[in-house]
Image (cartoon, rainbow, N blue to C red; front, side, top):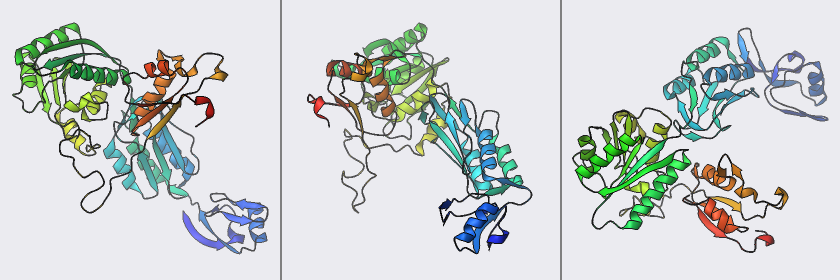
Length: 424
């Protein structure tokens, strides 16, 4: 491809590089020039224009983007029709985005005119959500570049695929010390149940046992026999060593410790183990809060059937510094900034307006309508909570008690507006 400033008289078949205003309108960039456009350019007083001239062996931007996107689309994804040198990949189902990061990096090194951008690996995505975009910077690329990119992007498993979450029934073991309060145990149970529900699974068996090795081992054995998977153990005291109560209890039950501790904060003090083919996860204390932490990353991957071993957990350190938690005894930095006055990134909140009377819905409350067994307002809140927006505020009004009940155990702030007919 040649890119040059040439006389208008020689521009037939060339691609206009920049939009040009002419009498009666605009000739937009990317347009292949014909005698009609050339006449309009001359009428505008132009004698020379900047164009791209496609040569033998070149592939147009749209064809190149489409070919590479189709090659990159793996299981449960599809590519859109290319337009202006761009083709997007979308998820066909909700789940986790599994991405071959090394190949994506290699693709972006082939030629500066070829780019591919993806969502974060293992990010939870919704159906129809964009997971990647291929953009061709120039108006054309050599066939050799496009063919090389296609070959690199086309893998047996797919360069980018979406792995759906599987519905499972988990077991929960809560340990207690003499000073453990019942409301603490209840809060932990509610937090785990809400997490599982948000991921399409449910909490089955629940046991409260003394914080002792033998009691933990016996409970794990019973949970395993009952078919619970995963088995989540929430200790009365944080797990700080492989010889501590929970790891020792797992070993006594015949299980294995895969990893103690993870480079994700909050979530450092997590235990990952196995008993046969069943996951045993020691939840960190921060799992009592609905806020995102490292436990979520492990739980999501295992519910998707993706392998998580020690090396996988170690790799979570890149991007593993999550937001500050208010309960931390020693915050990482001062709330308003560091000693140099540098502020952290701004927080983005979300507001869900759920105060309306649904008068156009035929008498019933649309927000409470059942969609695959879940009220619509709860589905909306779960989708917002899957993003990074915090806090999530829900404004209630009409039938507020029923709406609040539909949102039970979700990490949302409720604001009631009794004067709902008066507008915002």
